[in-house]
Structures are given as structure tokens and as C-alpha cells.
Length: 81
Image (cartoon, rainbow, N blue to C red):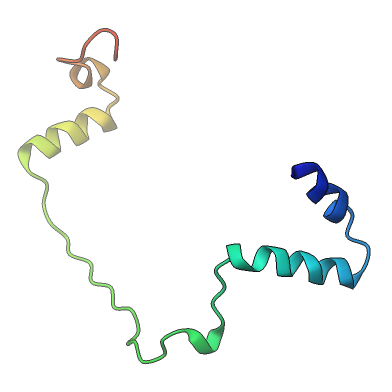
């Protein structure tokens, strides 16, 4: 129970308690050590592609930039606006 856990590990005062806590928690934790990680992966490569916005994207971008709420709320239900 929670109370028993807090009574036992609420105040960690010595190494024995820490070791016991580690053994209790170990089945629930995922721990990766450096030697277990794949080393043959190539370094991450990032490619940035610049594209133009479509006309509708430009319209919405401009409305957001100009804070044109009347355009942005057009067609929205009153309960959502």
C-alpha cells in the first residue's frame, strides 16, 4: 500500500534503503546503458526544403498575422468562438 511504501522509503537515510528501493523499482524502469545503444547508425541528416504557401494558406497566414478574428471565426459555431 501507499502508506507502507512511504513508511519504508519516505526518508532515505542510508545506502541499504536506497539499494532496496532500487530493487523494488527496477522492474518498472526502462534503463538504457551506453553499450546497449546501436553504434552503427549514421549521424542524423537534416534537409530543409523551402516551399511557397498555397493561396488559401497565405490567406489564413495573413489573417493570423494581422489578428483578423472576424475572418478566422467566419463559419464557426457561436459556442466554439
